[in-house]
Length: 456
Image (cartoon, rainbow, N blue to C red; front, side, top):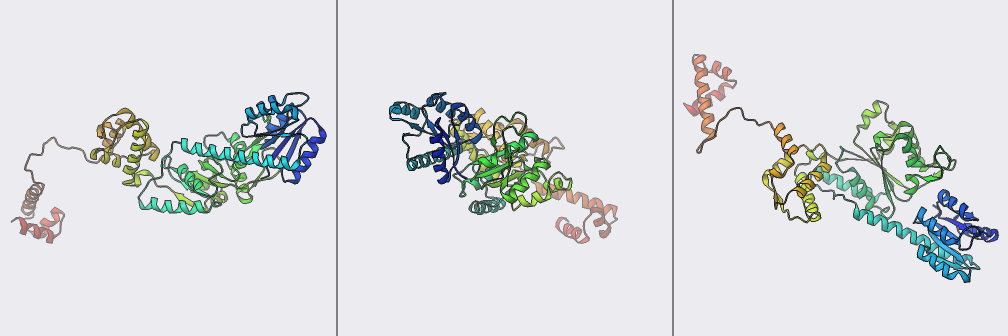
């Protein structure tokens, strides 16, 4: 997309001459003659760079520079000043302006200064992305289960093919956003934004404006133009979580965007083209939603170019322990504790529990255990009570008699004793007829013969 430049100067000739020159360089240019108009343009035009004259008739340039930075700190300001105003220009630099140019102005010099500003802005955005990645409390995607290994291979392939639409499916808490983040961060789009939106968390009437943006006065309360996620993420990725909750009318608009890579803001006439990748995720059964006319079949096929299904944690076997141990390391370090692992009994309980909240629930359980305990090894008693109760409630092994197993007990001898008792009883009832006795015992005649040879 073209970089946007706003020229703020109260002299008509200067504004128009600079505008014509910058248009030839390929910029999108707007102008303002005073402070009031300038701030309106900042809100509506959302420039990347501003050329600001320090001496305007209605307001001091320093005040305007300060207000611009309060609106959007990413906007780069280049000061235009006469020789006598150099000291004021330096003050503006301290307020956040990136450069100053002395009048009379040279168009080539202006272009070079804007190029410098654009690079600075890009670096600021990249720095913010990296800082957000560092600060974000997520876990690595861990798994040795064969299904997970196949998913990892698919993630790497999709990272290399950065224009392919992806649909990630799985229960809540399985790590769908982490898969999306991995694909983005290992793709050619990694230095651009990945913007996420939870479609279920935003009211239907606001979801459209969040995605597509709106023009000033498009509806009541729209006091300024607003860019949507599709526009803000140009060059990057948009992650649509809880895709199945998008209303049908917005589904139609999303489908048109996926087909054309263009959209219109609400209330707008201009078609805006962007280069973004869509990664969508849902825990909803979309096939059932299609049958109920709650989800568009054509949108489903358009999104389901490359599907990824993440299995629930309870189906991943020993991965449960590997993930638990990873979180134990993370939170031991975070809370300055010295845990070294789990007892064997605790491991058995972690494997038995069905984990309805999947990895998210496991993460929260381990964090709680680390916070509340100080032992080096986490044992069954350190597990949350609700987890222990759930396992006890669902275990199929319950005592039916009140007895103790004594030392020297032999299960094989006990089974043999019982078998001999029932065989004798069956032979008495069958009056010695082996075929009838075998039928009474529910075994074959040959099985009865083997047991008679063994015991008698």
